[in-house]
Amino acid sequence: QVQLVESGGGLVQAGGSLKLSCAASGRTFSSYRMGWLRQAPGKEREFVAGITSSSGRIYYADSVKGRFAISRDNAKNMVYLQMNSLKPDDTAIYYCAAARNDYSAYEYWGQGTQVTVSS
Image (cartoon, rainbow, N blue to C red; front, side, top):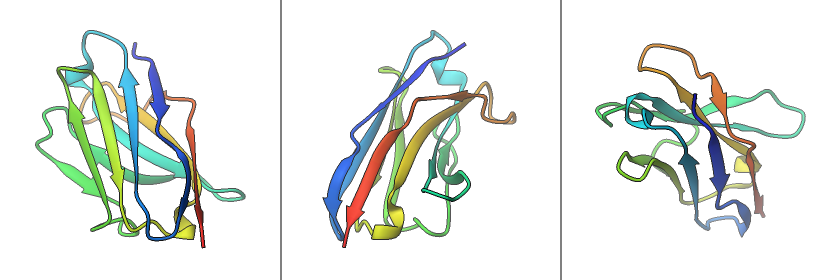
C-alpha cells in the first residue's frame, strides 16, 4: 500500500506557474504508475498527466499539453507536476494518484491540493 501527500498548490495569476509535489510512502514506489488528476467545482474528476514506473512513457490530457510537465524521482519517492501558462480553467483541486503497476487502474489517492488561477 502507498500513501500520497500533495503540496505546492496556491493562488496564481493567469499566465503564471506552479509546481505541485507528491510525496509517496512505501518501498515499492518505483513500480507504481503515477498520475495527476483534477476536479473543478461542479465537474467530474479528470485526468491531467500520467507517468509509467520507469518514466518510459508520459502522457497528458489535450487541455494541458505543452503547458504542464510530469516527472518523478524514484530515489526520493516523489512525483511532480510543473504547470506553466496557467489559465483560469485550470482552477481545481489536484490529486496525486498511484496504480500498483503500469496496467492497473489508479487505486491510491492523496488528499488533494487546491490550485486557483485568477484572471
